[in-house]
Amino acid sequence: MDRTTEERERVIVRFAGDSGDGMQLAGGQFTAATAAVGNDLVTLPDFPAEIRAPAGTPAGVSSFQIHFANRDIATPGDTPNLLVAMNPAALRANVSQLEPGAGIVVNEDAFTKRNLLKAGYEASPLDDDSLDRFQVWRVPMTTMCQRAAEAIEGAATRDVQKSRNLFALGLICWMYDRPIDGTERWISDKFAASEAVRDINLAALRAGWNFGETTEVIGTRVHVAPATDVRPGTYRNINGTQATSLGLIAASVRSGLPLCLAAYPITPASDLLHDLARRRDVGVRTVQAEDEIAAAGIALGASYGGALGVTATSGPGMDLKAETIGLAVMLELPLVIIDVQRAGPSTGMPTKTEQSDLLMALHGRHGESPLPVVAASTPGNCFDAAYEAVQIAVQYRTPVILLTDLFLANSSEPWRVPSAADLPVIDPGFAPPGDPDSAFLPYARDEHGARPWALPGNPGTQHQIGGLEKADVVGSISYDPVNHARMTALRAAKVAGVAVPDVVVDTDPGAEVLVLGWGSSAGAVRAGVRRVRQRGLPVAHAHLHHLNPLPSNLGEVLRSHRSVLVPEMNSGQLARVLRAEYLVDVHSHSKVEGRPLFAAELEDAILKEIEG
Image 1: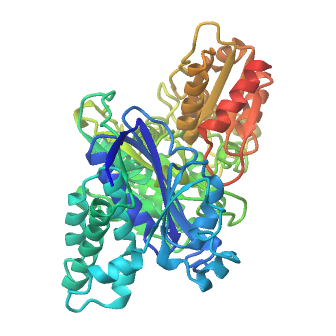
Image 2: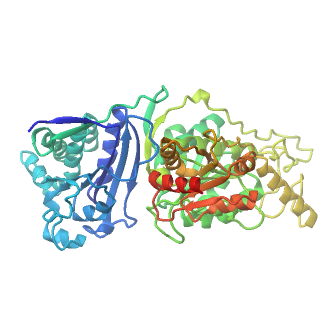
């Protein structure tokens, strides 16, 4: 059989299997190999909420999707060109999302009668005509792994069974011309403590590659050339969690403030605690608190003591931090609260993404307690957003909420590593020791409306601290109605005066429709706009990174377009804010499915908006 190589501009691959099949590992290693050859890429991990969902059922399917290309791309892609299905449940859970003509690689050995029944199949879809519209490759992965491990001394059956994901990875690397030497080094390091396990996994990976190289089942190999439209510089593959960690560390270094992260484990924010816990080498201190309330209190206490206090959580964790955030507003101390948003009220869907905490971030506190809200837009942008959140918190002596979400936290993309020297210095501006015989004025304010950051123990800066209302300037406890109104107004004015850049509009001549996104919808919105422009239709696009205060030119931008479309992964929360703030009847495109927005659906929504 003649072998051919097909050149493609972009490809979408999805690995899918049981939650114990190692799909995230296979996808992660395929991502590393793809980054190594110079493609642009975006990934989308997806896994069950339960720690151990029912094995072999569609509810227990874990998947990892990667979209890679020889040009700039913005999303993890809509529908896969290739699905790797490790069992019948993985096929059943994903086949409805494939376009006709897509490829499917199945582990044929897993299509047993028992597995078919658990997946809800009465008969094997491999033996009827239900998959005729796809190109299906039946590969006996389990059998091939067993053969590859036959000569390995001490090879346990369980370890051989678990190596199927690496067989699949080797085969897919061959199909898309990805190197496997990086994965071989990773395996050698990961399983260095067990020679047998190391050799089993190496054998499985090489067996998958060799299966593609030697068999005549797969006749066409796909090649995607490296991306060339990228800025020069040093790049690394990074997800939003890692970028957030690095942004906080960089801000700690450039401010001279020791970083203290206090958190209570909760999905998907826990990874940030795990990541920063490994960075004691740069002075990071992490505390796993007994609950969310304690975590917020520890972080605020760290700020009171002169450190960079940060706390991170998801979903219901924000509820429990509310009182301490209010206390931080009252004390006017720096504090960064990172909300890695997830889907649903209550415990909701912890492993699914959403943008539904916006109104909580803006208003979810008692009393009049405004604070700045910053939103990251891409995995790499989490670095900049975290750095800016620290800048604002320190300069204005205020708590700041940084909104990311599960999609950003887990997705990855190539990231241009910045130069440390190019990052602005953050001046803590601690109050200097004063004259012990003179009265210290803890609520006197600078040009930003910020009060002095007085460290405990500094002579001449002693003052009262606590949640009760403060007398203007002097800071003593006060129940005076007029003073309370004045302090409320001063705190609000300080937040309203936070300097944020104008929103930048990317527009075509004659564009009447503006598409305005925020947060992690950036990639999907950009891709949807690009598709509309490829049709020759004019459209304008802007994206918000600052949700409070909003950019000063935003009202003018909204009113200068005939129609404004606001896509969100919620029921239209930003749209409500814009209508209330600017009296502009923006149109909402909302999605509350626990999944990211897709470029195709935004293309349709924009076209309808243009048609009016």
